[in-house]
Structure formats: C-alpha cells, structure tokens
Length: 240
Image (cartoon, rainbow, N blue to C red; front, side, top):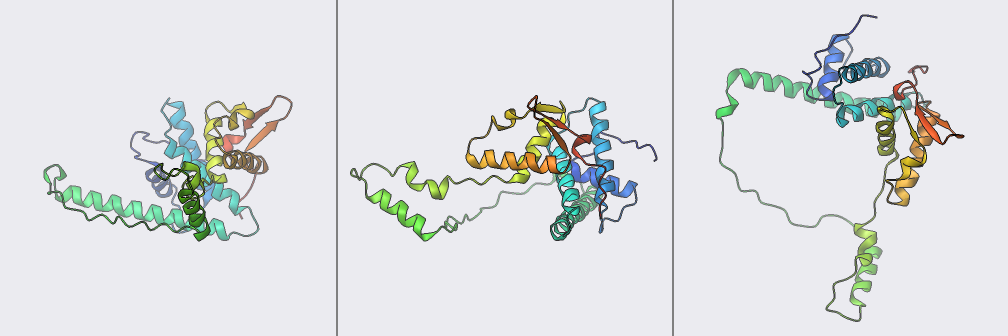
C-alpha cells in the first residue's frame, strides 16, 4: 500500500479530512466504502498522535461513528447502515459545497470589510413541546393540592415532564472508546463512576457488551480490566 503523507495542520475538522481521503484514494462519495475509509482515517489519527498533536473530540467522535456504521453493515439487514451512509454522504456533499462557495467568495471580495446593521428578530415565545395529558394533570393536582398556596410547586411535581433523561447506547460507545483511546485499558468499574442515573448505568453496560460483541474491546474478568483491541476496530471482519 502506498505510504500516506498528510499536512496535519490543514484540516479544519473531520469532514474536511474525510473529503481529503475520498479525493486522495479516488473513492465514490455517493457509495462510500466504509472499511477502506475507516482504515485511512484511523491511520491519520495515529499520525496525529505520533506528532504529539492533540486529537480533538470531534475527530474521535467521527471515528466512533464510522466504526458504528461498519458494525451495522455486518448485520444481515443493512437498512440502518444505508441510512447512516446516506446521512454521512449528505453532510460531506453539503460541506464540499460550502468549501467551494467560500473559495469563490474569497476570490471575489474581502470579507474583512463587509458589515451590516443588526436586524430585529421576532422571537416566538410560544411553548410548543407536547406532553402526556395525564402527566400534566398529575403535576397540576400536586401543585394546587399544597396546604400553603403561596409556596411554588416542588421540583418533584414536574419531574416526569422536565427531569426525565434518556441516555443513548451510541453516546456511551463513544464515551468508552474515548476513555480507552490514550491508555489502551481501564478499570471496568471506573466506567460507571460518572453515571448519575439508572439510564446512564444501563446505557454504559450495554455499550460495553456491544463493543465486546464487535471484538473492539476485551474484558479481563480476573483483573477487572477492559482493553482496546486494534484501535477499537475489528479489522478481521469484512463489509458485505
């Protein structure tokens, strides 16, 4: 394989880097080969680490996103994977158009001397979030049923409306990969130290199971350790 060389300080973000890799390796942007693109992307991340450059979270998040798409492509049904690939393709095309427009504008005008007066913006203050009618009724009954009507309703009265938090497994996959990226291993129980709710705990546990199943991490039961495998990617699997 041809040895890659990059100008590491020229990429403004992960989309900029992906467009560079697609152009350099002559990939079809409308039908991206995720496995090949992911391999090139991770090689670039490693080069950034070799040059002692700080790898920002947005680059790591894109790496985790590509890993997730590759994992979904290994499943018998590819509907979700195709939708994720189309979403990534749309973002790349939109970013590419923005680059072209920015280049054209830079050639035609000097943006340092363009200014305009601030416009008045009419804010829509209407509350448009929909709630279950029974939750609203319960909150109302709890509020008006207080002995002291001068006191405001307690926070618990509206907990089901404003305090409910859902944690996605995908966000915890990114969290675990970030934790293991620099050191390569960590204590299993340390992943749960920052969990503030049952939803956090369950999502973290499911994320660990998903990564172990995809052979991206290994679990040492005797030493209570988890280790990163192959940079978090199962290179032995092939995209179908």
